[in-house]
Image 1: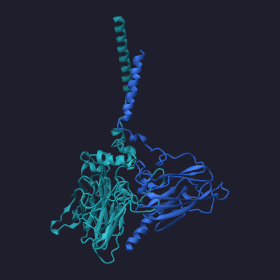
Image 2: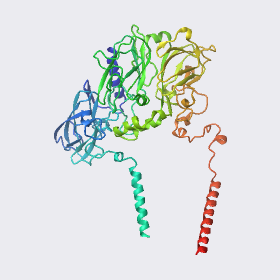
Image 3: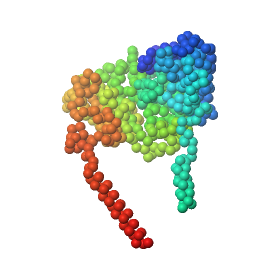
Image 4: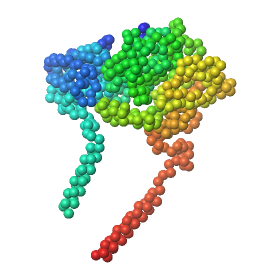
Length: 205
Length: 392
C-alpha cells in the first residue's frame, strides 16, 4: 500500500517537473487548477467588468450526436464580455481524467498562456480567471492524447470574438469533409469534368 | 495511451506536438512481489475499447467480486470502453518474468505496442521494488533476490512494427473510419514488419538507452521478452550466456548450457545470465560487444542497416563520460540523419567516397540524348508534313 502511494506521487511529479514555465498549480485528489487568477485584470482592462459562471460537464455521454466524437463537453461555444471574471465548474462524468484548458491568454499573467482545469474520473474542479480586453476567440480543449481530436474541442468567445474556430463539434465543419464522400468520388468528378469538356469541344467543331 | 496516469499535458506543446518523456511505447515494465495482493486499474483514456491480459502471471478467471479478470472479450468480459475503468486482481504464487497486453483485437492492438513486461519478484523481507521501469533498460532498484546474485539487472523488450498498420491511425481523424481501417481493411495475414525496436527505440537510439554496462568479473541478469510478431534469434558478441528461466520458469541445472544464440518465439520470455569472466567461454575480454536479432531484417530500419534492435554489452572502461560508448569504427553522424534512412547516403560514403560514393549524373550524355530526341521528333514531324502535302 505504501508503495502504491509512493508510485502515485512519483507519476504525478513526473510531468510537473518537466514543465518549462513555472505554473501556479493547486492540486488535490480531485484534480488541478492551474494559473487561477481572481484578482489581477489583464493590461487594457479598467478593473473587472463583471462575473460570469459556467458549468461544463465532460465525458463520453456528451459525445452522442456529434459525428466522429468519442468524448465530449456539454458547453462548446462560451461567450463572455471583455475583462470579465470567469468561473468554470468542470464536472467529469467519466472514470478517466479530463481537462478544460484555454490557450492564448497573455503570458505575463498566465504562464504558458494557459488556464487549465483538470478533473480526475468522477470528480469536479472549479477555477476562476479574468479574460483580456480584446475581442478574441480562444481555443478550449482537453489535452489528454487524442481527446481534442475526438470531440473535446470548444471555443471561448470574448466580446465579439475573432471568428469561429474550425472543427468545433456541433458548431463548425469537420477538418476533413472528404472522408464522408463515397470512395473514389473525386476521381469520378474529375472524369465527369473531362468528359463534359470533351463533348463541348466536339460539338463546337 | 501507453503511459501511466499522470497530470498535465500529454505533449510538450501544442506545436510541434511532441510527446512528453513519460509517454512511452511499449508500456512500462511492472514489478510486483510474489504473494502480494495486487490490484491494477486500467483507465481507458483511448478512443477504442481495451482490456488488460496478464500473460503467464498467476491470476484467477474472475475477481473476488465475480467480474472478468482474464482480459479476453471473447471469453471473460466486455472490454473497458472509452472513458471507463476496470480493476484487475492477482495474488501471484509463482515468481518469474511474465508479460501483459491488451486482448481486444490482439492481432492489431498488441502489434501496436499495448504490451509490457510483468515481473513477479521472489518474496523476500525488506524488498524494495522498482514498480515501474519506464522505457525498460536498466533496473535501477533490483530486488533482494536479484542483488544476491547479480551486479545489475536489465529489462529488454523487443518489438517489431508494420508501418502500414501504424500509419492507419494518422490517415483520418474520425474514429469510425480509423477503427474500420485498422480492424477491417488491414489484413494481418499479409503483413510484413518494417521497424525493429528494443525498449521502444531503434538503432542508433538503442545505444543511448539500452546498453548493458558492467565491469569485468560482474554477473548480470537480462530479462528478455519478444513482443513482436516474428521470432528473434538473439545473439551476443564476445559472450556466451546461460538461459536460467523460460517463460518465468527455471530451467533445470542439467539442461543449462552456454550459448550465443537464443530463439524467442512471439510472447516468449527468457532470463539470461551473463558472466563477464574472460575465460574463453563466458566472455572474451573487455570491449564494446553488440547484441542483436541475428535474423537479417531485425538489424535494419525499414531495410537500411545498421538499424533495428542492435545494442551492445559495454565494459565500463569503454564508456565515455557522456554515457556513450567510445567506439572505434566509422563516424556515426550519418545514422542520426533522416537522409541515411531515406536511402540517399551511399553505404560506404564515410570512408571510400571517391570509389564507392554517389556515381553522380552524366550531364553531357543527358543533354545529347535530349538533343537527339528533339531532332528525331523534328524529323518525324517533317516526314508527316511532306506525306500530308503529297496526299493533297
